[in-house]
Image (tube, rainbow, N blue to C red; front, side):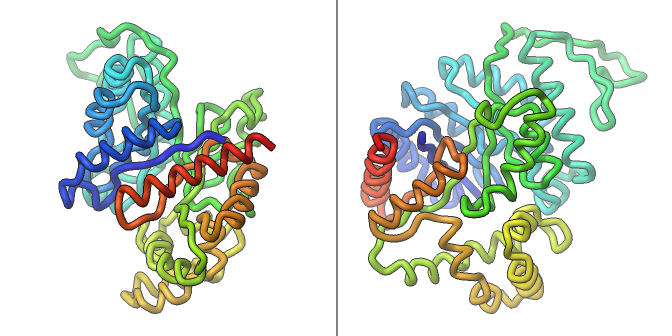
Length: 350
C-alpha cells in the first residue's frame, strides 16, 4: 500500500498555521508519502496551498481533496488543473466532489439538484479541455457556448495534457458506479474496510460496465492513526467528530456520509445520531455513536493492533491508505506517520 495525507478542511485558515502545514508535508515527502490532498469546505480553497507546495516539494503528488464542482465552472476547473500540472511538473491530481446542499446552496448560491448529472457534465467538459478540443457541450446543466449569445466554442490556449488523473469523492451507489466507469481513483470517506463491499461493489459494477477492473482504480481510504495502549479512551474522544459527520455533513434529508454508514450496517445508529444532532442534542448524539463504528473507521491501538488493521485495509482492496496521524504536535504526528510507514513496509515485505 501507498500512503497519502491531507491538509485543509472546514477549520483551515482559522489559525494561520499554513507554514506549519507546509513543513509537515515536506517532512512527509521525505518519509515516502505518495500524495497530499488539500481539502476545501468553507475554509481555505483547495488550489492555492498546492501551488505553494509545488515549489517546496519535488516528488509527492498534489491533489485537490476535493475541489467542489459547484464552486467553479468546468472550464475554469480545467484551466486551473492544467496550470497546476505545468507548475508541479505533472504531479497534480484533480480530485472532484459534489459537496453537500448546505455548502452548495448556502455558501455558493448554486442549486444542488441532480449532483451526479452535474458531476458527469463537469468531467466531460474538463476532459475535453485536457484533450485540447474546442469546448462545445450540450448538457442539461452546462451548455457551451451559451445559446443566443455572442460566444463561440473555444479551446484552451494551454497545450493538451491528457495525463492529469481525475479522482472522484463519491458515496451514493450510482455515483460510486460512475466512479468505476470513468475515474482514475476514488477518494473514500465513511469507509470501513470490514464492510468494504458497501462501497467497492458499486465501483466494481461500474468498472465492469466500462470494460475495466477494480485493479485499474486507485482506492484511497483510511482514517486517523493513533498508537495507544488505551484504545477505549481514544474511541470516546473521537465520537464527537463522527457524530458531526453523521449529523451535520449535509442537511436533515441529504447526508451521503450518513447513508454510507447505514449501508455498512449501522442504519439505526446513524439515523438516531442524525436525529439528535439536528434537534440540537449534540451531547446525546455523541454518546450514541457506537464504539465499533469509530474503531472500524480508524486505526487505533498498539503496533500489533495497527498492523492487524493495516492488513484489513489491504485485503479489502485499499491501494493507498489515507492517514491522519495522531499527535499533539507536528513532531508527534510525524513520529506517528513514520511508525505507520514502517509497519506498511513490513506488511508489504510479507
